[in-house]
Length: 179
Image 1 (cartoon, one colour):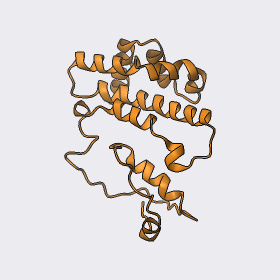
Image 2 (image 1 turned 60 degrees about the vertical axis):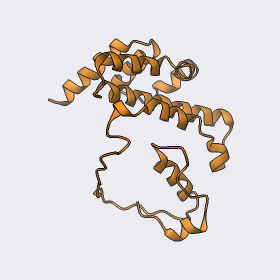
Image 3 (image 1 turned 45 degrees about the horizontal axis):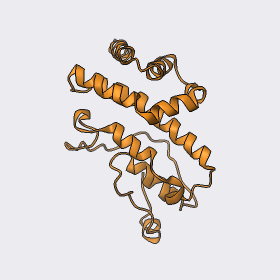
């Protein structure tokens, strides 16, 4: 992405949110794009990726990504972004985003360099968390929409707190993708 420095300097609220260490770029984009009159997308898929040794996404064992996801879930988007949606709709959207993050984190943590017992404990703690339990209960039908069979299997593991099923599904997926 290329940003207009003029738009950023003219709008002091456009900044990276304090206290958010992962996903802060997405929040910055919302603030920036909210001030734009137009945006141009180009048909080019190349980029210059700079690998940073201490990057937040390099080592899952050193980062508590679920805690970060909960921090983003609890973020007050309405206050900071002036979102014009009913509280119920915001709650639903945040819940769906969090459960999608948990689906991804199941894979991240079962493929991390944690020892097996630590992986099981971490994944169980994540899927047994009261917020995840509430989301699964409140939005079960909505959560399953447009999901693949694999994602629904993962969701069933989350719904019934079956860590072994999550490990098995993740291992099978990894095996299948390596063919």
